[in-house]
Amino acid sequence: MCTAGVHGNEPAGGRALLRIMADFSSQTLSRGRVLALTGNMQALALKERYQVKDLNRIWSQERANRLRKDPKSAAFPEEVEMAALLPILHHAMDQTSGKVFLLDLHSTSGLGAPFACCMEVTHHRQFMESLSIPMILGLRPRMQGTLMDYIASFGHGAIGVEGGQNDDPDTVDCHEACIRVAIGAIGMTDSSSDPKQEEARALLVQRSKGLPRYLEINHRYAVEEDDQFVMTPGFRNFSSVDAGQILAHDRHGPIRAKESGIILFPRYQAEGADGFFLARPTTL
Ligand SMILES: [Zn+2]
Image (cartoon, rainbow, N blue to C red; front, top):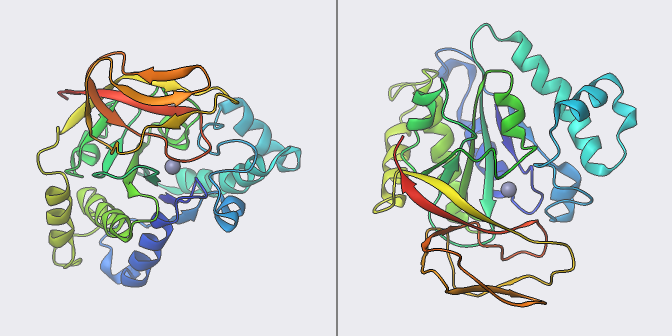
């Protein structure tokens, strides 16, 4: 399953999926099916990250159970979107005799190389290791209510892909490459049924050159509403920062790096509760 546009200001994943779906027919897949889903359709139309609540922070089991039982109980636009997605996601999970793998396609407001995220390292290691882009491990304690966590809670594989900057055309290429490589890694295609697969793999290797293969998050800067948080210009995903360096400002003054590290998700957009993350290289 590929989901795109769970954040409405991130159109690149959907564009990549349209390209892939035009290329793949049932004849090119040796097994399985690819399901392409749009996330926050209303926010995508508005080109906004979300309307009322972040659609990638509300996937609790309680809310999902309520919306599955009573879709009409949806109280705000993102719950309406979630209520529409739930039966499709569960149908796919119920129908399969094997495993479902979710690739949730995102992009970032800051520039920089692509990377992937997973909630925890579990049984779908082969899927995780396939992408050849830096992988952020163990995001669960730092980010709750994500779609990938919800899918993973049923024992399926789930990876989030941050393909690059939101409106950069390169981001679409990167998402397309990730989808092709992931589909190959779980045995649905090979290089004879998808001639573009090798090229896709090479693109991901080239984009990730010189970057750590695995990283763990050691700090998340939480932004409160009305903080007037403004990221200092010039940071990209994977920029190195030194302890004490000014990373942003808000109404209380400068915000400095608590420790040295690698910056991820510097927030150059108006919305969102994550100001930035600091990470360090790790091993699997
Ligand atoms: Zn996103």
